[in-house]
Length: 349
Image 1 (cartoon, rainbow, N blue to C red):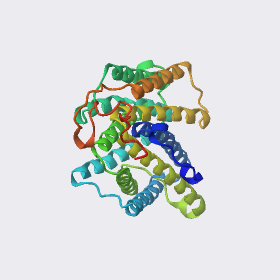
Image 2 (cartoon, rainbow, N blue to C red):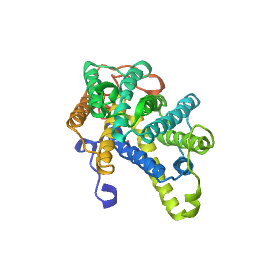
Image 3 (spheres, rainbow, N blue to C red):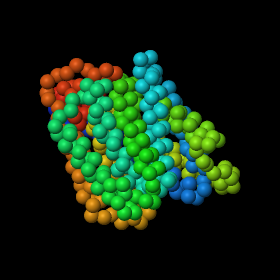
Image 4 (tube, rainbow, N blue to C red):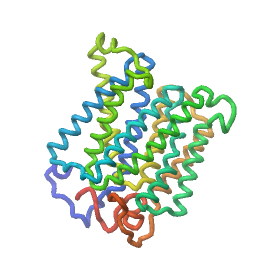
């Protein structure tokens, strides 16, 4: 804005710069909105008997092409040989995360309940970040994780814990898919951090290409059921509009997750991302599907958000720690919110 208006830029000492960690948390909130939008759109199109999987394949190939063109125009370095396996795994985990959570919604789970049950990723990401990335775990982190999990349980009210018929509509399939999708979400955070200095564009390209290939092939097997392509032929303009919307949501989600997971410690990125998906999911549940929220749901949301605040603003000890493998840092190199100390690694750089 300063450049476009012709005004002189402020100096670093006079301007509070946004750290990469803070920007990463904001991106994880954005991906919660776009990811939930994709889940809701998928459920709506499947109810309308549109071939959503193959439409997603088309949008995925377009996304991968755009990422490849951006990498060429920006002269983005190709991932180093030792990072390529993590880039590929990032794409596979991204595919599994979206596929499993969408399946959970399609078999009867609500977007908010699915995001709640997928909160298992916060625990897995914290543990995996400690083991593989050298990110420290403090007592406050345990409190935050417990608050997030307890809040998720109160919000979803699964029938296997609360009894009654609250979860009877979705059945155990939705629970299994949601938990498995949460596990894949933890894998996204770990692979993004292990990819080191690899550009988020390559991470996004990997996810888009892997997802496009899977969504284009799996409907022709017994693993995924898709409807016929007749709606695309009969109403091409409407089909193009739906594919364009899927494309926009996919670009925003994949790009935000890739950059946000890379700029934040694993526990922070997954906690903020899960909370964002829960909030947006329940908002869609109320506004779009007309399901009212109960008192236990609001209490669970408050617990979840309090856990997010504790996780985001907790700080690791100031003592320096050696960089973790794959470019990840130990807790001493960054605050838990991902904020660099001493003005390092800010967006202006």
